[in-house]
Image 1 (cartoon, rainbow, N blue to C red):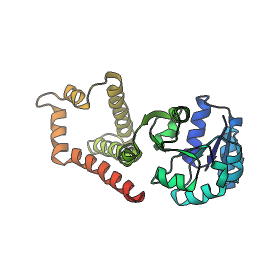
Image 2 (image 1 turned 90 degrees about the horizontal axis):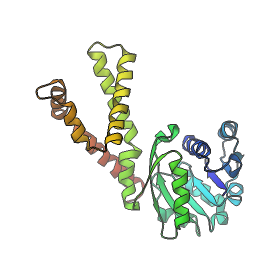
Image 3 (image 1 turned 90 degrees about the vertical axis):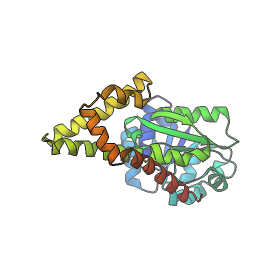
Length: 265
């Protein structure tokens, strides 16, 4: 199977590297197109995939097209490919572009809309995807193989993708802020900056791994750490008093609502 990538930025780079690492296909089965020669050269040098500057040329040699351009460039990119997309699978990772809009710009294409996050760059992405009603089970298997090469994959209804954007799409930024704050707390209490950051990072990694390994609800694991009248209870009381729980919830909702505005909902 041949794959064309429209775009050669960070997410395209991460997905291509993941596909090659997982042996989804060979480098010779991928062609990437982009109007920026420097990006193409960097991608080619790192992965040995084929590169061109023409979207039409890239689409002509592939049965699957992965759309990784900026939202404002979608119309141009798909317009350049023209009839070369007809009868092909179009997988879009462009934020705010609904399936209906993509199908109107790429008539005859079968469309899968996906939302990965930046952890794709280290092979730990959370990706949710939704399909139009012409997508086949084989098409879904293709999308699963592409996105499982960069992390975990979840099939959802398109109406849920805004919530996905608010949670896992924007979520890494929330976690980075939390890690920064934990580290600052350590420094405020006398720890060296690097040690505080290392401890904060490993604490977050360990807590996430505990949930994965035990399948316990976070509340159960939280109770395991919280002794009556102990240090953790004192810290949790302060977090609740500051509204941290509701702040995270509202952040997800605000990002989800903004995703809806961007997609015209």
